[in-house]
Length: 248
Ligand SMILES: Cc1cc2nc3c(=O)[nH]c(=O)nc-3n(C[C@H](O)[C@H](O)[C@H](O)COP(=O)(O)OP(=O)(O)OC[C@H]3O[C@@H](n4cnc5c(N)ncnc54)[C@H](O)[C@@H]3O)c2cc1C
Image (tube, rainbow, N blue to C red; front, side, top):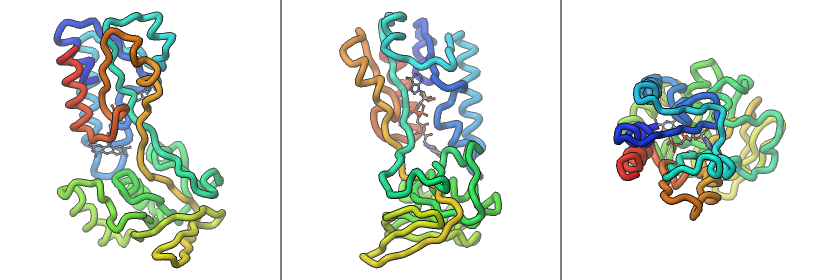
């Protein structure tokens, strides 16, 4: 949306394709955990800019090679983002396993006792989201530090809250298997078992670069924006968008 906004301001005729029914991408999810509501205003701002600049927004419209052949654009900006990683762990397809994103959007419910696999930003925020709903959550993290990817100004108060709320936190844990009643893991070669009604998975995102690979060399001008090209925070993604809109 930032790329579309800046390109339109510079006089380009812009069409924005979004395969889901809503604009915002992962920012929609970012605004769902506790203390994160303000991200919703970012989406409100961008949507209003789309309207104001009369950008042709096509929802429920996946951009494919066929779309490229039909549209024949002078330039293509790809910002297809990233998708959650589903790790190759034994038992990952069990009925008691859900992805963090599905929990945040309310697509999936969990039982009372929850193990969160992954203690990065998404895992921690989803754990807190579930904790506020009265669930008993334990985060298991492979690294020696919880919320390693969260900036200090957010991490410190988060860790204070987690200690006050007695959030379960286990580090240096390698998950080996998900069973019907919990998670088998190891730490320093020792076997562990974490009982759970539900297991939530938040082990990171991977670039959704399928379209990018397909269109390379097939358009006069091609720009890559945001996490489809590599990991990034909102600030980096919006900067990329600005630069693409400014250069095109
Ligand atoms: C729970 C959660 C909390 C977060 N909190 C923060 C935070 O506090 N701070 C921060 O900086 N970052 C946060 N992030 C990360 C941040 O949201 C992402 O870095 C950012 O949204 C990525 O933007 P993007 O434009 O690259 O991709 P995305 O947000 O993934 O958007 C890509 C869009 O492209 C659409 N799309 C994909 N393929 C096609 C296609 N072929 N045709 C049409 N449309 C397509 C998708 O449907 C999607 O809407 C959070 C993420 C999550 C999940």
